Length: 225
Picture (cartoon, one colour):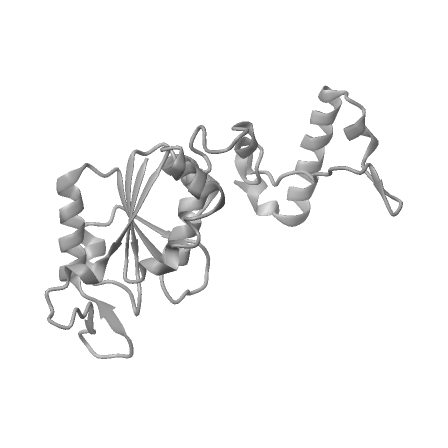
């Protein structure tokens, strides 16, 4: 998979992509993540990438020309499955979206800033709009990092144990059951006996029951879906 991220602040993404699972995925050649500075495609002598919004009002708008120039350059090099815009008014990111995107080959992720991007880009170029929640960030970079992490970990070979991702919360619309590790007793707090029994069919039943109970208590809306 290749992911091209279009941003005004590529340095914000150096940290998330240079450690842990995302770094290992890149080192293994399972994913290629490229950052592109939109400012490099501005024809303005001062490299400005924003302007006042038509109709007046507070806040600047990201200019159409440098964004389109960058997108068209990339599209000449390869075919992209999705051109994603990270925006608070997009579809809220859920596990099924991550599952779907993890099967794609080439993705572009556009990070917004200021009051957002010129609407004509959304109308004519963007194929999917994603939000990571009902709140506003200073820019789309952190949201792009969240999306990238959530889908890359699903690519076969990225996790040491590929079944791990299949038992995460939100797969099958259930939260994950409680988990425990050694020691079996700490300050009188004990691990449930069934988990120490070695009876794997019973352990699986216990986990399914606890996952359902936790979902009922904390996210009953998932069961409605």
